[in-house]
Image (cartoon, one colour):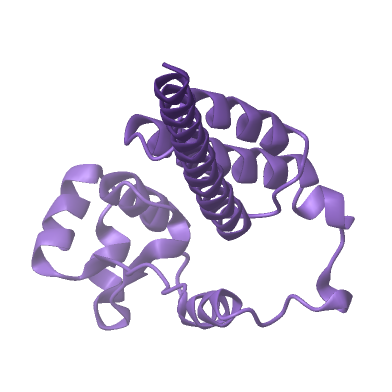
Length: 182
């Protein structure tokens, strides 16, 4: 077996790859052995006696399969966790997200005139004070507060009507008494 060290180096140089990627045709050893220039190797490459080997395949099938499982929530039990709970998902991030959701809802309700600016302000401060744990609780509270406002308004209207009726009755009575005295 003749040494083809030089030939391999030249072929690698022409093919623009590493020596491990060069394939020399074992049936054409003599012709390859005689080639000692890059020009000769360009000809051998054209004839197919020297070939650049294809890259080895590095399959991602297993990686993809595992990633799919992780999306479903597998491989994340107690034994797989390295960081603390706070490091894995900071409570500050949770707080920021929740606060943004609640404030967005309040702004939307205020712009749609579902709540007035006074109720908005008190609810805003309550959100800041960690009163509502999620959007649903806040919405329920708003509905309750609005119904309470409506009830209070209705009661106020009733009381006003009662007062005005009493006032009218009293004035009529005084008129009657005044007429009798004449």
